[in-house]
Length: 484
Figure 1 (cartoon, rainbow, N blue to C red):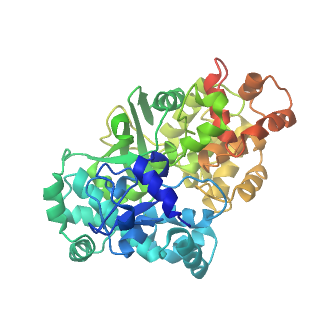
Figure 2: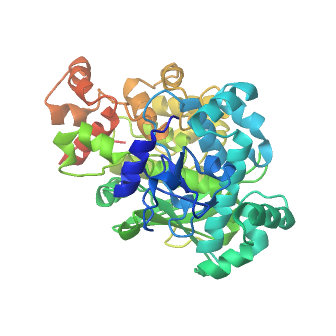
């Protein structure tokens, strides 16, 4: 990514939050690199150099600022096709896929060779994937040292280091102080029975609209949503063939810090990269409201900073979309609750009445369609859900962020009972595709006063490439009618 020094310095002078996470500034007079929103006195331009990633700044010899904390910067949203594969690889690295899978697994997941991955990654971020991964591990550890009371060994393990000795050596070499020294300087806070970390976003953030959307779709025993808190049970396979890791998470809004506060039990610390990635997708934290709202002025004044409610897990959204076909939200929630009760994973010791998770693709693929019908699904939808679960479990359909949209839509619509509406909802919320638009949605058609999907698409063309955000705004406006 090419950076214009004049533009970057102007953003630095004004502390423009639109650029937070899009570049970092190294200050030669201090040896520190900062986010463009750092509150310290603005350095002279001649002392500034600009970098497309924290890893690039560290490779140039700079240490992270203790004031603005680069590890809290929001990530890159999907704005165009250029660099999309590199950002997909970066997202996988952020979630810890390199530990222990290796960078070859990252290349395989994004469908390219390791050599090509290195080439496009260095063009986008200014460093190799290996250097980027090491910086992300160190920054994750820095955040845990500052925000939690985890023991050093647990911090090293959570950040993906093979040993405490290696962790201490790299931390001291890169940052000029020991992990214990940083903890003493920062004054770690928190409760011993839970971890809380900050996840930054670019303001504004329409928190009330987000929790309203999630609350109307919350499944009893799986999720609990209030005006100031979102909680859910989670389960995922840490390694192929291993028993699922279970636990719970809670998310609160911290508007003064332009961040969400993620709380989880300490036993999930070693999986924090994966969990943070899921929460960022669920709450669409990497969106660019400055660009999106400027493109959708007819909606933005009503709810500035509206986000697309995403997915902690892509298959979950697909399951919700199939279950919700042509029925109301209350009935869909009942069926989903039965699926969780009969086929989900039990989560012990979770707060707020969270008891079970929704089943994953492998579990439902092992069920019979008759077992799914017993949960309240019609025969046709039971066959559709089973076919979908089988396709995902066998790897024929990948429902992950930044998956290639058109091939994925085609693969979904080749399955029985999945048409354009269902596929577009999955693309919108499961894949995080901001231009998805379910033109056959009855609520959207009513809001726009149009009957034919072709007319809907023609009308929505003005909102591209943010048609998905326009759809969420229209759902928000609706006074009746329910969507998945």
